[in-house]
Image 1 (spheres, helix red, strand yellow):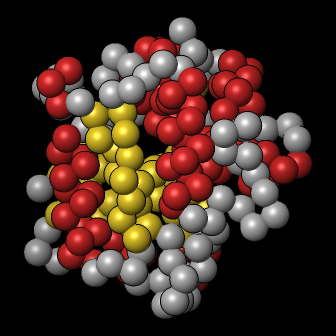
Image 2 (image 1 turned 30 degrees about the horizontal axis):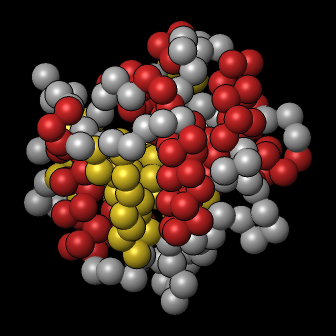
Length: 209
């Protein structure tokens, strides 16, 4: 079974891109803020949470997206060690949501030390509900994932078969399909994990209709 969530484009860019950020710290360490911005635009467009994204979320320019990212920056500010824990993202983005007056969206975490099966089941549950999954990878022994080391990005799809369980990883204006079992098994004791979104079920519609 294969399921993908709708995303958004900025010109030809699939979502935002931290390479657009003009200041050094945001350019090299703004992936957490960018992930929150992309989440916000998604929820505004596909879950009617209009208060958490710019008014013209459906037609953002790069300039407007960058302006939005710097609005997010105080909540998920780049730091020397990066946003290297799930709770830092959850606390920062929760403060942003609260300041926007949005109380329907909440978050929990799934630590990277949990078994692969828990990660797979979480992805299926989240995507089937219509929620993208903020993902943190810290160190990784597999060089195939070097572009995801110490990095936040979104997962917004999965492709399940008898041979493998693939996830659609969104970052730097593009996406690629990754083997979740290999991605999850970083080979390091300290790992990242998933942030899991929860929306008031009584006030949403099916995003895949």
